[in-house]
Each structure stands twice: as C-alpha cells, then as structure tokens.
Length: 131
Image (cartoon, rainbow, N blue to C red):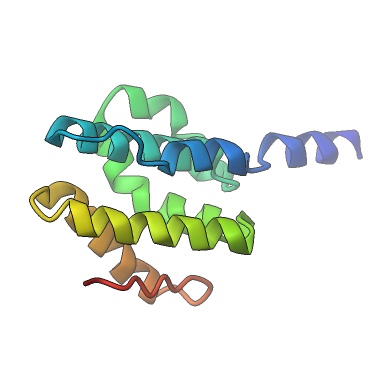
C-alpha cells in the first residue's frame, strides 16, 4: 500500500508549476518566444502524470528535439488534471500567443499543430478562437 501511495505522489501534476510556465510576461523578441515555448514544453513533460512521458524529462535538457516531439502528448496528458479555470486561462494564453506571434512561425505552428492534435483526441478539444 505504501508503494502505491508513493507512486501516486511521484506522478501528481503540479498545476501551479505549469501555470508559471505558460504565463507570457516580458516576451518581446523571437528568442523570448522560442524560450517560452521550450520552457512550456519542458514543464509539460516534467509535470506529466504519464510515467513514460515524465521519464523523458531529464532528456529535455540534452536536445530540444525531445521537447518538440513530446509536446502534444505531454499537453494531452496534463490537460485533464487542470481545473476548469486553469484550462480557460491556458486556452486564453494560447489564443494570445497566436495573435501576437504571427511573425513567429515556429511558435504559432506549434500551437496550431497542438490544436489539430487535440481535435483527434476524445478527452481534449481546445477550440481556439483564431482571429
């Protein structure tokens, strides 16, 4: 029983850590947006309740390919663990990213790919409003 409790506590999502990662404050340059995207991806992987995804967390510092590859799966694994207000805030943030990052193809393409990916997953549908 103690082992099961320990496993449960190991893979609990820290939603406040994710909130800190998705906040877009003081982002001005292309490099800032790239850093924001990497930090969000790394946080999603690190906080994922999926043992397989979370096990890849130490690798995110070695190569950005890991973070890009696991971004969508990590997002989908974390999404159900967020409260409704947190989900609304994250959607609002992603919509804001699309509005201001139109010149940043990597960032906007990642968000658009995420929306398409989640459209194919039964438990997650972002329905981003793209203006």
